[in-house]
Image 1: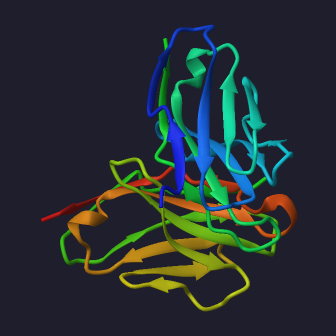
Image 2 (image 1 turned 135 degrees about the vertical axis):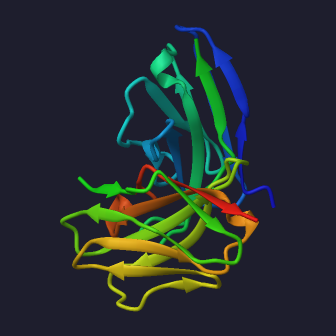
Length: 114
Length: 117
């Protein structure tokens, strides 16, 4: 089982460039999430999608956009990258909202913005 | 808003010994869940153990157990018979229960645990 797959694993951008982080899950989960992890800090929620067709802001949404393309895929876009967005990005998925959930995480994307 | 605090940036333990990682949290909620996640050098986030706030009994998973003190808002993780593979960053996390709160975790800063042979 692949679980949650993120691409790419590493990326270096210049300030002002744009890019999309891809995430796909094969567990038929309804809910998907994007977190970022900065050095010395725990993960913080950027955006989430409780179900296909819905997206909502998390704790740190500024500078990001998301698309829930279908039930499997949830992408995160940086329109104009800034050095403050240098971080490790994690995608996660979980079972249907309203029930107790266990999160399944991808292996992360290390993003550096120069 | 909830906050989670891990006051031990780093801990070390000898193989086969026991170590306890501390976590405190602040919330006005009555129904919630608490978690410990392990992050080895591979970066993968692995769920170690979880506790439902409404349960008085402390959760256990093999060598891992928690001491959940709801009134004190404390949630410590005890690792018994430590193994070299336990070396990792450990995160305490909080999740409100109900509605659209599922999956929305608040994490502590993490504790780096090193197990020495």
